[in-house]
Image (tube, rainbow, N blue to C red):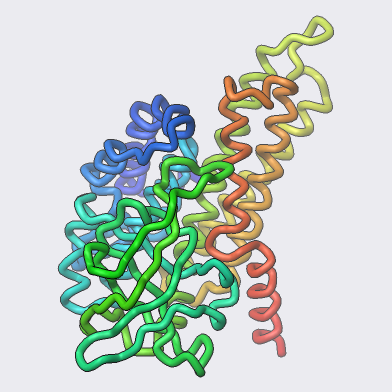
Length: 380
């Protein structure tokens, strides 16, 4: 894949790789152990201009395309899945604010790209995740304001965000067609943060629940038309699912590299275990599936960059890459044997971190539904 890149793409990706290997990789174990938001790495990625990787130059971004953004994500996640996750949030937030926001939102974009303004998205609720139509948080119009009441769960960056993009019902009777997205500054009265979530993996992302108790915000804080957030969110999912697929791909690549190195140095029965056909076949399958996932992601990203609708292709890439990554890292751990079950080896962290990829940005069961519906629509 890298042999097909332009000079500009190669420069950006090499920059990301050097930073990831020099700065992120040495810090990854401590971020996981201490469950600490990697603020200095977040700032470093911003200073390199990488938060603008998916945003056009005329909107303040780096002018690179989605295909390049996915390759940059792969390099970062190869060194830390958690930092990869942290990287995706401002990249996606800047795109969302620039594409769907008015002047009040677009004024925030430079701060997001610089790492000064931290944005979180609050969509999921304690009782509703994939069922967007069932969301209970409401935004009631009161003159020139909305009054927001409800509870959100699993808000990444919820503990540290300056602003939150809240998905709330503005027409409770209209299901998904009654959903609006409203920017809420976290210093407004009526917002409370829940306790930090204790997660299996992906530590350091300042995850918590948020409660909104009559929080008053101007109508001007709404992104896009009233009751129009569902379509906006679905369009955004195409890019975010490719980023999630690339994050899983980066972790799978790390698992393959670790398994290969370990198998070449681990001696059993008088020979490196890499010389055993059973291990060789596992490594071969991992390499083949990683390459296939990369091609699926790049195919979808390039279609997106060319202006095509990619709901099916994005779902296929996310489904295949994340299922593959979980399988590949499980095999990498198996190659490590008992050592793979120890925190002394990176593969243990990879095993915990990658599991989220099959849940985040729409579960893989939801991806299968999307693919099936798109097929039926195309051939019905």
